[in-house]
Amino acid sequence: MTIPHMIQPNYYPRGYNVHFAEQFKKELKVPINSVGSIDIEMADRLIGEAKCDMVALVRPVIADN
Ligand SMILES: Cc1cc2nc3c(=O)[nH]c(=O)nc-3n(C[C@H](O)[C@H](O)[C@H](O)COP(=O)(O)O)c2cc1C
Image (tube, rainbow, N blue to C red; front, side, top):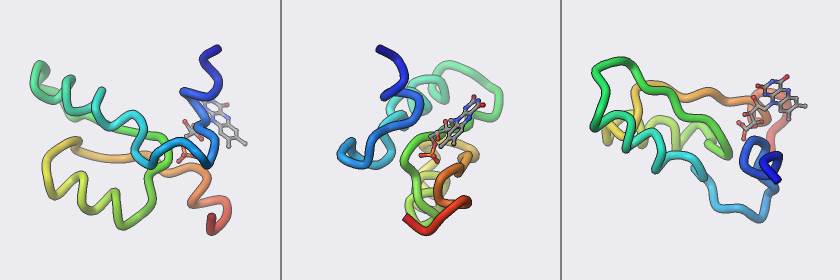
């Protein structure tokens, strides 16, 4: 069942996919995006820590969750 991995339920930890971005960033020389249960403060921290180069926010932009 892949749907919970694409649109994580609220009881999943925030930044659920970030570990994938970190791995890709180590191996590839292209900009790496992460998505999934990331809020704006976390986005700032993840980019600051170079865990990814950019993030996509979907639900935080639709509603303040
Ligand atoms: C209402 C809704 C519709 C979505 N539709 C798509 C879609 O058509 N294609 C897609 O790749 N992802 C779609 N997604 C998944 C989002 O792109 C995103 O991966 C997911 O919501 C996790 O990010 P978030 O925690 O910032 O919302 C949708 C998500 C929601 C909540």
